[in-house]
Structures are given as structure tokens and as C-alpha cells.
Image (cartoon, rainbow, N blue to C red; front, top):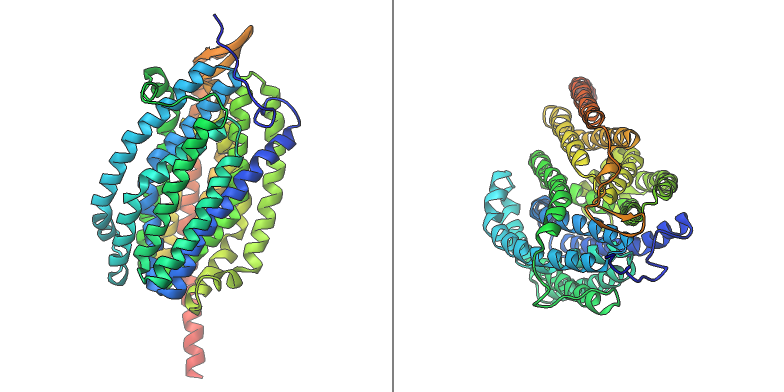
Length: 520
């Protein structure tokens, strides 16, 4: 007996209407919410940089990749949940949709508790392992432990927002983010400037604001007319849904975990260049985060778009959405790159008055400005594949990119003693990832991973089989992607070594010129 179709408002249903309009209208609230997310992150940095100092600012920056390392687990869970919710929604399965949401929240409670305890225990040992400077490590430890203590509130916001986006609603996550940002800014000013809590005050402001927004998102999920029921009877783990979630969420989480672990290695390289560089790098990454916001918003929009339309069996509409997304991504990436190149020093001045840190920020932005189109294409292709449930090959590509970036950073920065190599490695890995994802997209293997499809006579079934595909052809396709990845990594690693030698020659020439000037 077919299950009743989920009732939906046209604004949340992405399987009908203008493709461009649906993508843009979905992306705008995501964009607005992301801007406010970056805003309160930026306010953290401005308050610390202006009222505490560059060393304290560096301690916040050092904490970011460690925090992301543990957060990647439930971020992967959120990605899997959003994809499956959108597919069940598109396939019109109300009962299965409700089980999926309850399974997500039940797993979130368990995993969130584990991350909270584990994060507080490992904060100091990891900072020591990363060779964190002595003038930074105490503040960094304090900041990390407080943030991990409040990770459950952040987790509930991530999970609730993922569910709402899967349902096609990107507005309410934005509303709660705006509330979170405003509250965070107010608390920052009170805790740091009035109460003089320094770095600890920034951390407490963040976790309080995140907790309140997390509670708000959960309440909206229950009371927003989505047909979702969550109570003590329904809040349980459905075995089949958990397996589907693990199939998508684990590779997604591992992708983020790989990125975070790689960033820890890069952070160790960064630490060798001193606190002025660390402060400048922190500022640059905050500014860079703003440039990536519209690209990430489109990536999220296309994830839900592909999920709902693949669930509804509308593959032609999916391809129309991909074409529209590519046009928007390239245009936005070009504009963001230009802004970063011409206004880097001025943007750095928002965070600190210290010239060395501002100069590092400006140099970094004037190097990496060329990577924003590649970063946008990565966001788009990853969004497309996430929406279809194809996450394993993107995970492998992410691993290859990090295996390219780390040796590139080592040869171009650590071996030469030139911090600019850190930025060059970012460009190399970005284009590497964009090229490999494009190859996989063109091969088409991502289409067969859809977990839920609408059947010919009505709503689909969980795990309904997709049209069969030759197993050997599938294996050959994935082998081709892997072979291309290895070839790309080898070529880029060799190129990095050559570039390192060239960089050393340039540095030697600069030193000789400076010596000559001094002699004169």
C-alpha cells in the first residue's frame, strides 16, 4: 500500500517551477545566514585583536582546525541527514521521513556527548603536539575547552538546520543564525570589554549563542508545519535509516575529517613562522571565509535541489540545475577574487592595527585570489554529488587534494623559509580538486547512488533500486577517477619540488640584492 505523499508548500518544493529562481531563492537565506555566521566569527576576532592583542588572536586561529576536527563528525551526520530528508521528501514518503528525522536527532545526542567529553580531554595534548608557541598555548587551551563544552548546542543547530534545508526551508535556519550572531556580538562586548574575560569571554559568548539558536531550530522543526513528530516514543534509532545515514554521513564526515587533519599538519607548518604570521593568517582566513559564503550557499542549494529531484525521478531537471549553478559560480568566483586582490590590506585593518599582521593578510589574499573559481566549482560539484548520495569518490578526491597540499606547502614554504608557499599550496590543491570532481561528474557514476526514488505509480520506496548498471563499467569508471587522481598528485608533487627550487633561487637573489644595497 503506497504511503501518503508529504504535503508541501510550493516555496519548499524544488521539483517544479523555474530552476534558476528555485536555486537563487533557496541560496539567498543560506547566504544571509552564512554572512551572519562569519559576522560573529569576525566580531570574535576583532574584539580579541583590538582589545586583547595579536597573540590572543593567534590563539583563536590555532584552535579552529582542532575544533573542526571533532566537529567534522556531526557535520557529516548533518550532510547525510539533509540528503536523505530531501530524497524522502521528493519521493513523497511522510512516515519514512519522520523516522529519518528522529534517527538523526537520536544519533546526534549520543555522538554529541562523546565529542564534548573527548574534545575537552584532548585539547591541550593536541596543541602541544602541534608545537604551539608558548605565548599562545594557554589561551588556545582555554578557548578550545570552553568551545568543546558547548558543542552539543552547536550540534543541535547543525542537525536541525540540515533537516530544514532537506525539507526545502532555508529561511528559518537563517533567522536563527541572525539571532545567534546578534546575541554573540552583544555577549562578546560584555564579556571581553566590560568583564575582561579575554579569550574565555569570546568562547563563552559563542557557545551561549549557539545553544539558544540550536534550541530554536529544534522547536521550529516540531512546530513549523512540516509534519514532523519528535517525542520520547518516536526519538529512537531506526536500523535501516541509520545504515542509510552512515552510508552517506560517514564518507561525508571522513571528508571533513581528512580536511581537518590535513589542516592540523598545515597549522604545524604555520606555527613555525611566528605569532605575527599566525595573526595575519587568522585574519586572512576570516576574510577568505566571507568570499566563500556565496559559493557555499549555492553548493547547499544544489544539494537540496538534486536530492529532491533525484528522489522525484527528474534527472533532466537536475542537469538544468547544474548548468545554472555553474554559470552563477564562475561569475561570483571572479568577483570575489577581484575584491580580495584589491582590498586585502584594508580588510585586514578591520581586525588589527598591527602592520605585520595586516601585511601577511594582504600578501595572502593577493596570492589566493585566483583560486575562488576553482573553490566555487568544488562546492558545486560536491553539492551535486551529495544530493545524489554519492560521497565516496568525493572523499577520495578530498584525500588526494590534501596529499597534494601538504607536500606542496612543505616544499614551497617550510623548505624555503618563505611563508608565501602556504598560499601557493592552497591554489594548487583547489584546482586539483576542481579538475578531478569535474571528471567524475562527466563520467556520471554519481547518479546511481540515490537511496530513494519515486516509483512509477507513486511515492518510491526506501532504497528502491535504481536502473541497473554494468558492474564492470562502474568499476572501470571509479578506477579511471582513482588513476587520474594518482597521476595528478604525482605531477603536482613533482611541480612543487621544482617550484621550491625556483623559490630558493629567488630568495637567494633577493638576499644578494639586499646585501649589495647595504654595502652601498
